[in-house]
Length: 305
Image 1 (cartoon, one colour):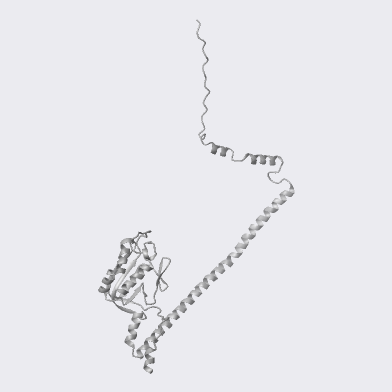
Image 2: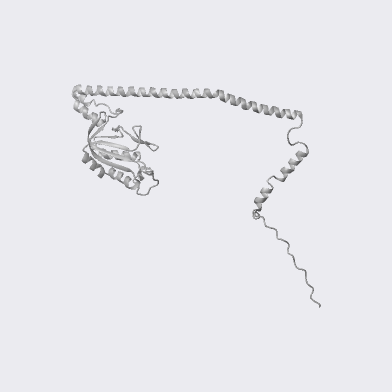
């Protein structure tokens, strides 16, 4: 029986499994050829010429040994020098600390002497005014100028930073005209407005954190710190004012400066409380020095003419 010639079956070659990193040909090439062929060829050439490895001749070995000894000597000398210099450095540091402590103690002693002399001058001034028949006027001038400590009815106003500092602000910010961006902290200009508002509302004497304010006092800023007469204050800021308590409290809260403080509370979280007090005590100002004013001689000249 004749049939059609049969073709041999087609045998497919076995499929080689694909490498897991076949898709990362660049990384694979870098890993497989981490050493450039040129470097490998140069290393092989030096090895064949006997140039690689440790020195073979006695002279080369002696040179290598001498270099190692020199390096060890330099390291040893450096360590020894540092060990010898350490006590000297420690001694100089202690001498500097002792000098700072000594100068600080000396400055404190001089300041104490200045305070004593200032008190003596104030006492002599009061005695001279009393002997000339101006005792009542001298007491009034001392109270108004801040040269004497005072007490009486008044108000206690405590101003503190916000619990959480905030940033930014909007067009209605009450600080927009002061040039400060809000950080949730009380600023020097805020305290200026508070103090001016109390004066305008009838306060007879004002202090901040025990620092008596006078006509020469300045409330300024150094960074985020508030300075009163160049003395730094820390929050909360306790403002005491002597005057008619009820009238002073109502007048301040209804004034423009009181409304400004209220706006800081509402918009920026500044905390403030005010209360009337039956008796508040304010210390005398540490220094009352007249720099420009001079006694008038007009009355004396008319009396002698």
